[in-house]
Length: 299
Ligand SMILES: C[S@@+](CC[C@H](N)C(=O)[O-])C[C@H]1O[C@@H](n2cnc3c(N)ncnc32)[C@H](O)[C@@H]1O
Image (cartoon, rainbow, N blue to C red; front, side):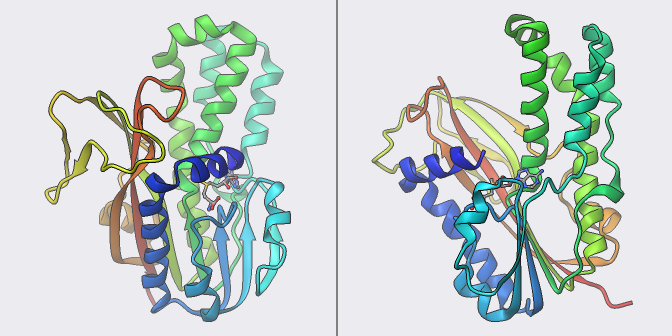
């Protein structure tokens, strides 16, 4: 995943610039209030979207967390780095895959095993600190799970069968996907961080009908309207899907899953992550990304 991000960030730099700027600007806005001893960054990755200029002066100690071991070398020399943590923050993906690989059951029973996976709240990585930045990782948790399952199913049952039954196995992934989101919220609650900034994909949109060149920036063929809906160029064929399984990030959702926090502000923007014509797919992809600043409510 990390290598894919690095490659795309380089080859599609003109298209990625706005997303990276918006992500960093959201952190600068957050840094106007967030400060303290420890800042924890979940999904630090290659730090492409991390605003170190705005955040480092506000904290004494930095803790960077990512499952990708390559990152450790890239983090060397980052000022104030007191802890570099390399692990799967869900604490359960490895166990889920081991369960799946160990069963060797036929198709329907295998799907039932997938459906039964629920991310236990207590195993999610959580460290106490003054501020927590969840940096474009929440929606990725489900993607990692989905890709691992797809790979397993293809090896065991063959690519054709998996392709033919895509809707069925994707449906089986839903309970686990939702459990991963809820588990992430529980980890945020346990962090007891006074300041939290959650940046995550909210929706994915795939379109066909406009071709781009990777060197020449042009606006995406879709917009997110002020009224809160998609508006597309005429003749564009498109479909959207939620990035977070069964969870919409509304004030009610935060009140339910993060009862110790209140939502202070939110922003959202579009990320033209893979314009049609720039990659080996017959469609282009746009993500809608959200930034949510939360503060702990004093007891
Ligand atoms: C979309 S990237 C975020 C971009 C990242 N901040 C950067 O600049 O490279 C998601 C990051 O989350 C990490 N990640 C995905 N699933 C993870 C998990 N279960 N535990 C820990 N890290 C994970 C990936 O390794 C990747 O670096």
